[in-house]
Image (cartoon, rainbow, N blue to C red; front, side, top):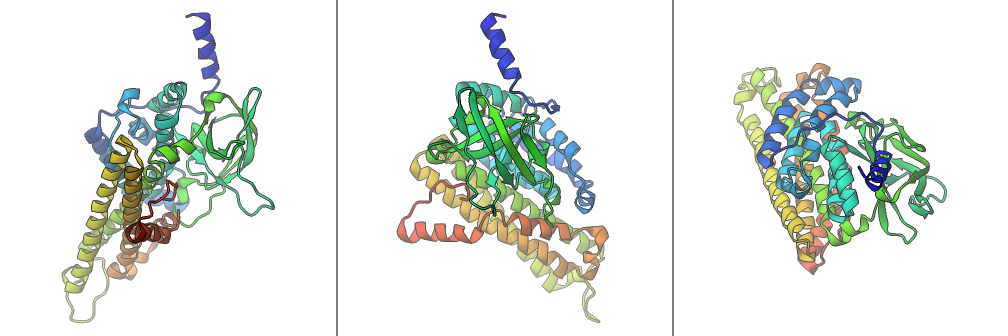
Length: 412
């Protein structure tokens, strides 16, 4: 090896994570990704209720998911990945979230990081970080600035003579505790949206597991503290271009659509199993068994129809995102944002509806602790608070009535 190559190798080794990496398989394409997701989901479902009840963080389960190659599914083929469609990405999130909604959500920001790197990363960043993802590394987020402090300002990722430096405090840091790399969204001195990619173990990076929500309990979406973290040029990315030039917002939100869809499916599956078991609601004297009661049958049918409609809208949104990724002009980016916004509104509604109807249809016995059915509603209620769904309807209506194309914001 030449002196120059040895120098480059040494520098990049210094940018690698200090966290052990579970070697990952490489998926062959969309069908392989879906088959793998179904196989892994069966493993995740076993123990999901216990993990939720006792808040057992899914470290080993995440190794299984990323080791199966699912965290690299949207790495482009040109860079050695499966390059699956975003229709498939949404389906994979739904499949995993039906098994364990927390595990489904932990991956969401990672997929966004893959998209940033693939679209606006330099050749060196693509080679290094996409290579890290292919070998099994996971990215977690530290994107939301802590609120409530006097004079709190967005995190500034400042240039120095040796690279970049940043300090600050972030909340809702989903995936950071399990990550090999933590992405921190801030801004450069010019005010442009920028991301810093921090390897686990970097001095000044502290991750706190102070997440105490009643839903999505094992996402460990706690707090990240940054104390003059120093990074080289390789670890800083101008992601404002991913929002202004690419379908970044739609890509990000599509994962959330899949998560809600999966929660709704899990609630309906448990409703059907419970009703079929006979351990269902006590009927009025002389009435039919619940499973043969036309009113119960009708409402189960309604959930199914709503779920199928949400799944169809999710597929429609995925197709729109695929079109915008292939040709990211303004019209296709706007169409993708609108399609995802419509799907997100519908999947949010069906997740809450199905997880609430479960108890109405199945009765008092279904509320007992051993069944842990309450986790579906808790997960739906917390996850659907991720961003204000009501504003999505406003954006859709404004586009229809006034021809106002949506901006490429992350919440759309």
